[in-house]
Length: 212
Image 1 (spheres, rainbow, N blue to C red):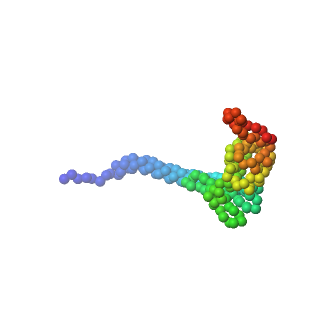
Image 2 (tube, rainbow, N blue to C red; image 1 turned 45 degrees about the vertical axis):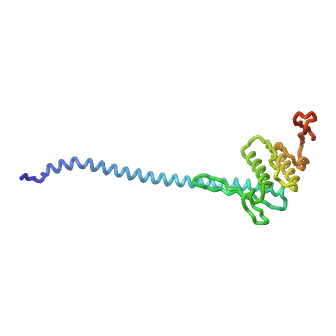
Image 3 (cartoon, rainbow, N blue to C red; image 1 turned 90 degrees about the horizontal axis):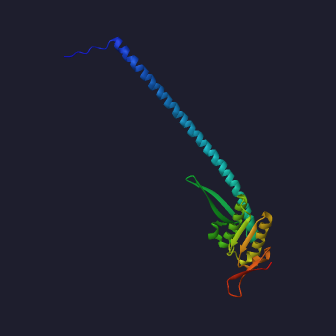
């Protein structure tokens, strides 16, 4: 039989001298890990707060801009359609961090609201698109020129005179040149310059004649 004698005090002391530095190093590493974890958690919390703040600022800025655009377009619709009060509505939506805008129109008197074309037809859509183009052009500080090729051909005849006056008002108020190509004679009366496309007598294409 092989007998094992208990370690002597000097031997235990030597072992302790080896283990103590390792234990101290392990404790220091654990403390550093806990500190790093706390810092990461605090940083994550700070980032979340900053993100929420930026989102709040963005939402408020968008809301203010939307209200301005809604007011301008709604005033233009009133100028064209008179007593039939239409109001544009822009509603920001966020899906998976991506912002989109839902565009609807409301008939204030009738309390009807929905997507413009589906609810009220193409004529109203074209008037809104024209007004939105003007707003975008001014906000983006683009060249003050709108080229419209049959862009308002769905507007009913009863509203063309008011629409022509609106185009003239926009041109005068904002210094915008509007080049409108149209078959609608009712739009001509409000134009500064009128050019008419005519068939050439010799049959060689189309000519342009200035009428005003």
